[in-house]
Amino acid sequence: MNRYSRRSFLKDAVKLSICTPLIPAGLKFGDKFQINSEENIMTVNGMVKASDLGFTLSHEHILVDFIGAEHYDPRRWKHEVVIKAVKPYLDEIKEFGCKSFVECTPEYIGRDPELLKKLSDLTGMLFLTNTGFYGAADNKYMPGKAYDMDTGSLAELWIGESESGINGSGIKPGFMKIGVAPGPLSELHQKIVKAAGQTHLETGLSIASHTGPAIPAFEEITLLQSLGIDPEAFIWVHAQNEKDPNQRLKAAKMGAWVSIDGLNPENADQYVNWLQDFKKHDLLHKVLVSHDAGWYSPGEEGGGSFTPYTAIFKDLVPKLKTNGFTSMEINQLFTVNPGKAFAKKVRKV
Ligand SMILES: [Zn+2]
Image (cartoon, rainbow, N blue to C red; front, side, top):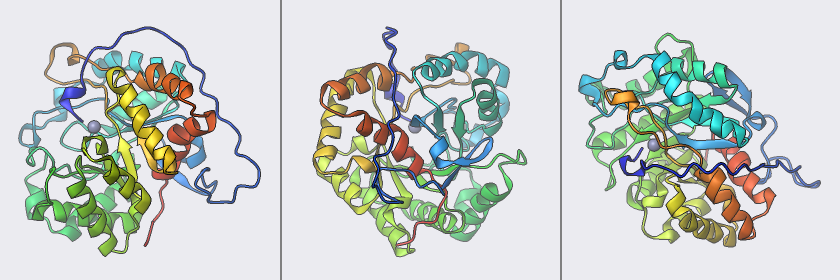
């Protein structure tokens, strides 16, 4: 999550209908334009077909607590208070046709699977939660034990959450969320990436990594490849923070998922340009777009200021349509790509 993405939005209620076109006849099974009907995704309410995900926001937050791992305490918030504050924003995107919500808040920053399950039950939307440790922000959100644990024990912890559920809740993660610093990978962050790789090979969970610039992104991809893992297991989170657009294209060509996830009403034109570039290079099938918005902040009055999850519906999709993007291409970005990126399957080189 990026603190600077918070801002208030115009609340003009332009309703859009997002159509889900049929897949044209003749496309092969496993084709890049469609979800594999045999693949599944783990939600906080259990396994669903990847094709059940529907229109998906692939990187958002419900609750974030920036207090740091040292003082982290889930008793700092109450579910009923958070639900009251957050649910109207979910109702709003549901009206736009949004069906699924990938909650990217890692453990020790506010990951709360039981809260997500309650929200899922109340809204009927599908929620994905995660496992992993977040090393970005100078390791402020890394628990002390992460320094002592070796790669194997970290992987064992995350595999355990995937197989038996998180902290006794029985709720299983739908992906991994890790985080690394914006420069070359430190030894500690290499360990986190390797542990994520080992976890992937056991569980098939995809690895979404808060990364930003290209330097650590390609180091992560290379490290995963050295473990025999295909780049398509990797989601390059906050790829919009890389200055050179060619680096994003290069990662997409390698098969990695490129997540441009800082959309807001003010930068929607920039996102249209980037997406046109991906389209020109026939790489639209490797891009994820989201807002990195939300969220309830414990310790702030009323949960602090909240950024709605609506710029995709109110700003980006209308602009894509006027710039010649077809319903099929919009469906690719928000339905097919998340359904493929978060499918629980081992991706070997
Ligand atoms: Zn985020």
